[in-house]
Image 1 (cartoon, rainbow, N blue to C red):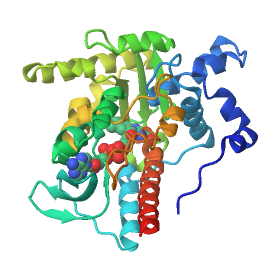
Image 2 (cartoon, rainbow, N blue to C red):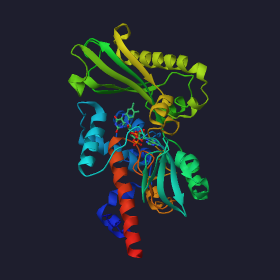
Image 3 (cartoon, rainbow, N blue to C red):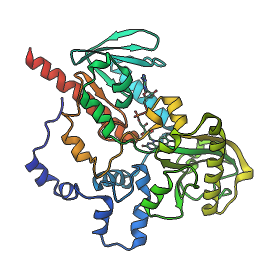
Amino acid sequence: MADPPMSKAQMHLKHPDFVRVAGYSATEVIKTFNRPQKAVDMLTPYWIYVGEPMDNLPFTIYAYCMADYFRGSFVPRNRSHEMSMRMQQKVEEGGAQFEFRQEVEKILVKDGRVYGVRTRRGDEIHCDYVISGAYPNRVYTQMIEPLSEVPEGAIKFVNGNRLNVCPVSVMLILAGTPEENGFVNYNTFSGDTMDTNEIWRNSQNLTEPYNFLTTVCLNFANPDCVPAGYTHVSITNLVPVDPFLDVKEEEYYDLKRRLASEMIGKFIEANGVDFRSRIAEIEVSTPITISHYVGAWKGSIYGYSHSMDNHIVAKRTMEEEDHFIKGLEFAGAHALAGDGQAPQIKNGRLAAKGVLKDMKKKEAAR
Ligand SMILES: Cc1cc2nc3c(=O)[nH]c(=O)nc-3n(C[C@H](O)[C@H](O)[C@H](O)COP(=O)(O)OP(=O)(O)OC[C@H]3O[C@@H](n4cnc5c(N)ncnc54)[C@H](O)[C@@H]3O)c2cc1C
């Protein structure tokens, strides 16, 4: 059953540091550490995984992300998809049923409460609760049936939330071992500057080569990910989706090739080993790829941005007001805990708590 929320007094007593830094940006709090710039620069690159320049990134979100890194990590042997499949297995053991390749087209609502969904195939499934992985942007503008059931506040909610960053990735299999290709560790951040305002400015357009990259060589975490003698690499930048919205269909493939070529070139500049002649396989993905394959709103994988003017603490306080249709919960990067695989488990748990809370309320009203 849902945990009762902690009182403000308890919060001050039990988590004074959390309360003390809640109103400050990552830059503001890190300044108080009085560390040399080099140390600050070493603490900065992870900003990209939460997608907001350090001056506008709430320290709370930055600290949450860094705490995860300091605790260490696990990499599933058969990729992250294995993790989803294992969770599916567990949930099925609990009696749930999965229906793959069934897109939900409509969420059926009457008198402010959901009563089911309709799939693209046309099947109508009646239920008391819907937990949506689709973004509120799509749900409130296209999926609720009838749309007259969407309150004005829901539209204000989607308009008031800015989409977070999306990945542009070049995925490569290279002939030769990681060492032969110049890789010495799992994750390398590289670029011209560690000024995140400048990186943010650079990522707003598609004309300049990206000036900040995060590169992962999977061999170091998972030596069996490719046959012996090969290297598995992904070179990524995480950027706002806006510049991609104006790309014309006929320009798209050229753009992908140019971005890939620039990103590989930039990484090689930093890495020092030119592996271009050893590329055995290459795939390039953009926000358009993500939108196409998983239907994420405008290709966003990171949900809504967490910024100083749209702070997690404020979001938490507004939870009740931001709940617009009874029986409808959201679980995904667009929900409270934000992006990443681990936060999705948290978001799923929060959605389940929402359902349980409503069930309890309904029971009490009987
Ligand atoms: C290249 C890349 C690298 C990443 N690396 C990491 C990493 O190292 N660590 C990390 O923590 N995170 C990483 N992420 C981010 C992480 O994958 C996402 O933040 C997370 O998957 C978001 O979860 P989600 O449930 O919102 O969306 P998804 O994982 O996209 O799941 C949403 C699901 O809902 C389905 N769906 C949507 N609409 C409908 C509908 N109408 N009907 C039926 N089904 C629907 C979609 O098909 C999809 O299966 C990475 C993402 C990418 C793209």
